[in-house]
Image 1: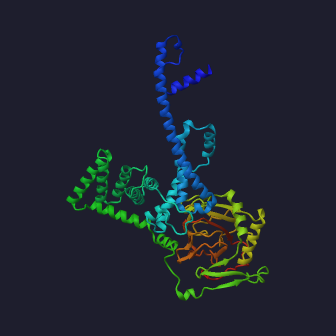
Image 2: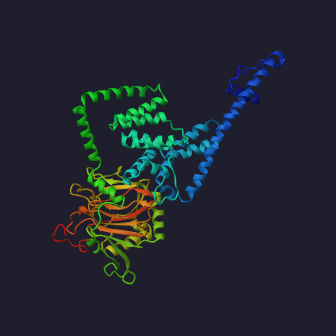
Image 3: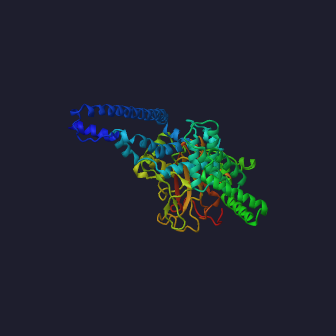
Amino acid sequence: MAFKKVWCALALGFLLPFSCAHTDFFTSIGHMTDLINTEKDLVVSLKDYIKAEESKLEQIKKWAEKLDQLTATATKDPEGFLGHPVNAFKLMKRLNTEWGELESLVLKDMSDGFISNMTIQRQFFPNDEDQTGAAKALLRLQDTYNLDTDTLSRGNLPGVKHKSFLTAEDCFELGKIAYTEADYYHTELWMEQALKQLDEGEVSSADKVYILDYLSYAVYQQGDLAKAMALTRRLLELDPEHQRANGNMKYFEYIMAKEKEANKSSTDSEEQEKETEVKKKDYLPERRKYEMLCRGEGLKMTPRRQKRLFCRYYDGNRNPRYILGPVKQEDEWDKPRIVRFLDIISDEEIETVKELAKPRLSRATVHDPETGKLTTAHYRVSKSAWLSGYESPVVSRINTRIQDLTGLDVSTAEELQVANYGVGGQYEPHFDFARANEPDAFKELGTGNRIATWLFYMSDVSAGGATVFPEVGASVWPRKGTAVFWYNLFPSGEGDYSTRHAACPVLVGNKWVSNKWLHERGQEFRRPCTLSELE
């Protein structure tokens, strides 16, 4: 009976032309001869099934071999591997999209073990938001560091350990994400790159018709009607019956004829002026300075000012702990005065701080000037954690070191904040101190404004990741084991607006920092007020 049930199930699965009800076949040779033909059909169906399964397994095998090599490389140096922004983006894309496609391919015939494991692991996979965020990070890096799409696609970035490249399908995906954001500039760049790679003979599932459809519209939205028409013609050569392309072509021809007759109407001129204004808003002077400084360009200190910068051995103003073993200190900038301490945190201390912070890392927040509350923001892309001195002797020792070398009381300071920047991680220009329009920014702390900032660099960064000060043109580059220090307030308590700074996007590598924000309370006799506001 059990065998009969199984066989009936198979019969239904292969759509057999007879019922599973018992018909006493053995009582008639005539009926039995019909079964010969049925069995023949079954064998043909079974062979087709085997062939389909073998083809499926071959695809899965190739996927597994590719992923086996990739993960073997990645697990040897996870941070170095993910330090390449293309690797980070492709990881997001694989786990959010491609693993799901693989699951759909094998779901019907895979073992319960795989499916249950996949179900459990899926809750930890990145989602659409992660994939979009990684894509936006690539676009941000492209703009900040003046990278052309081909350079980024080929993975030709400085200091990379694990070279990676974007396929035509990846480029198409980036273009689509830009398109959904109405970012037609980047849509055009990445759709053109996808098309270029396909034209060069790359084998891909990306379809030129779809690419040209997105590309022509993006070009049209940017005002290049002639190019949009040329791209649409190319699309129609591939698919003459494409409904939207045919409609667009008629519309483009109508607009072109109308423009020729009117010789550019005033409405068009107004639209062009609006577009120019939008572009001006998108590229404010501070933004340009910020991006130039991130690239190592922009304002430079004059030779005369440069001569005033020194390096020295520093004993913390004759602090007993450093009289016999002073630390190395060098001037990074004069106004505002930014100093760097060298060899100020050991590799062992760095690893301890990172291990303490990793389980607590969460999306970094900023103060909302309107509500005074903490919130996430698109201009700060990193994860952070807070460490207290009482929970680890290492953190306590670091806090004491900061107090000894700055001469400021750390008992009123905020906890040590540890930050790790992700793909394209950045923090756009901001002030550390609260301005006049943010009277309640640190009210809950009861320790006054942030008087100074101490920033440890806990990793080297292969490319990008500088701390820049757009107001004055200073660029401070990460060097593992060092720390920089500056005052945010003048001795009068007024904010020093020249300390407006930013963390540049990490182009290649992994950036770990930790910082201590010191507050006004407790510094009354350590840093007395002066009569002049700006002294």
